Amino acid sequence: MIEHRDDLGDKMGMWLFIFTELLLFGMLFVVYAVYRSMHPEAFKLGGEELDVALGTLNTVILLISSMTVAMSITAIQKGKKNLALALLSITLFIAVIFLVNKYFEWGVKFEYGFQPGGAELLELGQGTILFFGLYFMMTGIHALHILIGIGLFIYVIMKINKDKIHQTDYVWLENTGLYWHLVDLIWIFLFPLFYLIH
Amino acid sequence: MSEEKHHIVSFKTQFMVLLALLLLTAISVFITRFELGPFNTLAAMLVAGTKAAIVLAWFMHLKFESRLFIVMVSAVVVLFLLVLFVTFFDYSYR
Image (tube, rainbow over all chains, first blue to last red; front, side, top):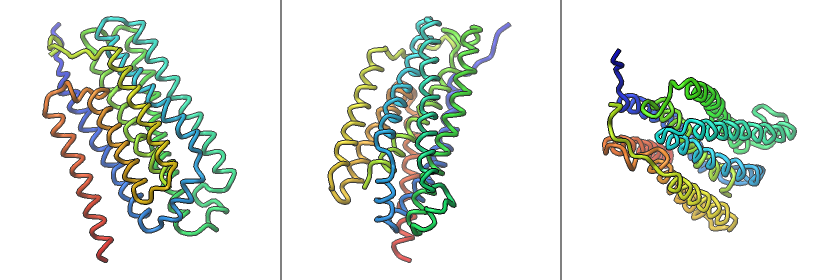
């Protein structure tokens, strides 16, 4: 049976989806930019409340996971199935660690009462409420994407294991990689805007 | 389609890309420690933009894909910048 495939079309479709994602986060960045220009002091103080060390750690491990997923495509192209599986397992592990870090980071904020609607937060004024609202909203939607990525990695690992993804048919892995790089791309902007700028 | 020649990015290249990204991360953490006023944001965004370009070019394979992909991505970036510009234009002259 001749199987019909259109790898370029599949990738094009993935890129179109990525554009909708970029615009989704892009508009949140526009909201951030406007509110920051209206409340510069509150955003500065809010940023100082965030844990730069934990943010940097998550940036570093997310960049490493972007490399391991890119390497897994090279491994598949070279026909090294086990290497690809190992690299994807590392990526999956890092994705989980990222969320564990986020859990602890958010946990501390909840303890301080900085979550949306938190008693302490409501006393701190409009600018701070907006800063933490955007912080939870944007890192939250980003974390949701990490969670979806974890599901995708498990699916792709199973497909490689069953030889459904192999040396000559790996567009599923490529598109999963593209998705993961998108998640990395968003974080590249979230990290300095929330954690570093003051 | 499956017989099409694919560009294979070597492990070494990918490792070098990671090193560049980590170096840029270190630079952005370092420079934002100083009080540079408005240049703080500008510097951080320049570094982030460079990192994004590196991820798009190598990890997302734009460097090796058809030119059409680069045109499409550029169009989305221009669209975003226009929305940003128009929004600020609106807020500044209210």
